Length: 442
View 1 (tube, rainbow, N blue to C red):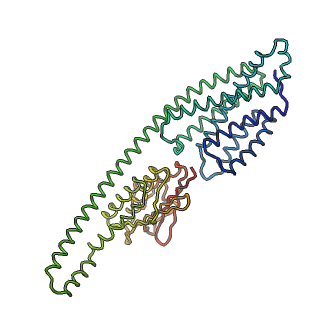
View 2 (view 1 turned 90 degrees about the vertical axis):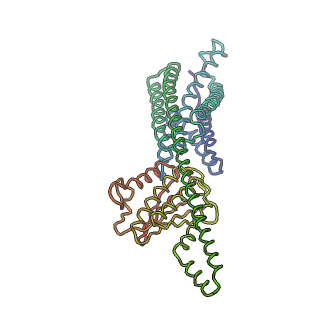
View 3 (view 1 turned 120 degrees about the vertical axis):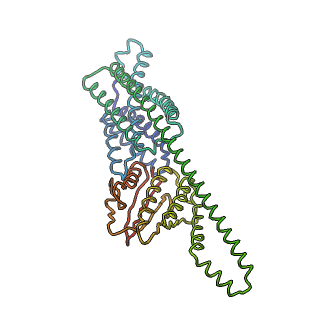
């Protein structure tokens, strides 16, 4: 039995939680002065508390992290999963390092000094810390390669559904390890038996984790294929819209040639002026000019988003609705979640255009704005007096008839499951504005 002093316990706890904090900050690139100061304060507190409460400190730390995320507008399961994985791994690595350190002491000490092993607490802690960091480095590299292999280039940090399931698995894993250690300490189980039980338990859970990673790999591959199909569809729609614009341009050129030909036959200046006045006031001429507003989509730098807006522009025109596009002179680009944003904006535009068809004022406005690290896509359309802002996202609710209220329900689900996405609804003077807000807080 190796006995260690309070000072040695503080040093041990310091290096245990130092490894966790360093890896966590490395993964999420937390290199700001505020993050460093916060990490140092947390590390000092955990070092002191860990020397007193031992294994219970990890449990308190996990509960604190969960409560902290619960207080946020949206729980970041990805951050919790990384944290739980680091804590659980550190517990197992510490148990293995402790057992190996005892073995080193037994090997390098003489047989007659084994009874006095308790006097080598400082040496034991030093060896344990070195072994712990060596094992931790090897495990980190192994896990990193496995994650890269099984998840590929697809970023699962944005998929809340996967992260929620992983959170449940990792929380159960952590709870099981804590229970195993608690029962072992309470029953006075030897370190050898404790390590054997712990490694057996970890091996079983490792196999389950491997199967889980395989499932995630298949799921993410399916999502990638679905995203590519959506992008191909948007590209096809965009090409159709370009073809439509080309036909409109040919039509305008044909009318222009006819206009020039007719002017060449006129000798009376006053008749020419009357002819030009009648033509420029015609609905066909104004429609051609209005179609020119579609040129503003050049500032949308996400191809599938630009293709969607162009497609909905001509769809609205076919429905007898004017779709006004408002974009600042600067480029608008979404840095992540583009596929989800396209699905949300597509649903909102379809809903707005269909509602505008039944209104006297058949104008729908889509505005793109970017402030600091926040992007906003606002869609406005007229509504009637029966419009209920508080029920629009309920399943089945629709102002356009029965069995047509699934679009906005899908919007609600997409926003809830995409980190950094928020929805704001505002009703003012028979108009409703639905704004998709995309922040950099991933």
